[in-house]
Amino acid sequence: MKHALIIYSGGLDTTVCVPLMRERGFERISTVCIDVGQPQADIDQATERAKIMGTEHVVLDVKEEFAAQHCFPAIHANADYFGYPLSTAIARPIIGQQAALYGLKVKADAFVHGCTGKGNDQFRIEFGLRMFAPEIPIIAPIRDANLTRTWEIEYAEKVGAPIGQSKDKIWSIDENLWGRSIEGGRLEDPSYAPPEEIFQWTRGFDACPNEPESVTISFEKGNPVAINGEALAPAAIVAKANEIAGRNGVGRIDMMEDRMIGLKVRENYECPGATMLIHAHKGLEALVTTHPERRFKAQVDQQWAEMAYQGLWWDPFMEDLNAFIGSVQTRVTGDVTLRLFKSSMQIMQRSSPFALYSEAAASFDDVEALEQSQMTGMVKTHGMASLLYAKLKSSGAL
Ligand code: ARG
Image (cartoon, rainbow, N blue to C red; front, side, top):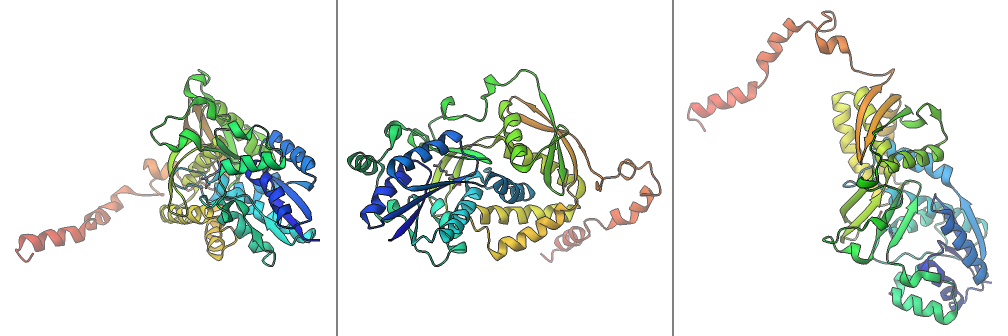
């Protein structure tokens, strides 16, 4: 009996995969829904639809792993792809990985995913699958048969696949612990202002409280471990950060995004927790690192973001970048207090046992730390090359 394992979200694309695979002769169909923090209603809907279609369905809760092994490294790298903290991007590899491991366990003959051929997710998910189960073939029915949404809806109705209200769904939404992406419909037009209704995690400017809120985040080796003194596990701390930043309107991102295949698209995200945690983390790194470390890490972080965007989570280059980033993190311990107010965010206080900052040295009060008269000679040599160049110019040699 040929056995297909469908990576199942319960949405239109993955739902039509079920009858499509049956038509292809797969007699045994499993569906796996990987919980990375999408709304419970989505998970329940997937379970319900799988039941209607009679698949062997399972939900794998990987939220804790996702937070600790994907969101936290994103904080360490100050994840930023042109303003996007990589929320969808960092979830795809773990979805591929977990589906691969499950597929090996249930001895699937093929993996099936519902990605279209225009996005980035096909790359990220297939990489995760191939990385952990390279022998199992992958089928992407929507992409490979060039299926359109309209065709899918008509087909689902014809074969009686449960797609519910998919017909009038205007936006395409992807959600996990690290953020929420809203795309499609009129949003594709960059001149169209996003309506307030697309946002669910963040308040609009007008709806924010009239009083600023202060929040203290404690980090240990680059990991957020407590908020306002309350120690929380990784998934809970990200959720709490989403709640606090979201209610103050922090973390809306409206950007032009360059996709992997060269397409430029307009994207909307709300990543309140990610935005706030990364800002605080960056603020703490600034206190504990040297100038060349900061300068170099900014470049490393940028490379990290490119790799993460492509979903190349287990690439050797990623390992190299993480080694440098990880070495810096050993000192990123301390507290950062932020003031959130009507979608703005400011660092008010930072402290660390590893601060490289010395008040005495900076204020010149401490003669031992730095005697200012010693600077005379050093200052004299500053700009030496420029002076030589000016001399050459005035001599007429240039
Ligand atoms: N473009 C984004 C990325 O590649 C997110 C796409 C999420 N999908 C969605 N249907 N909203 O990371």
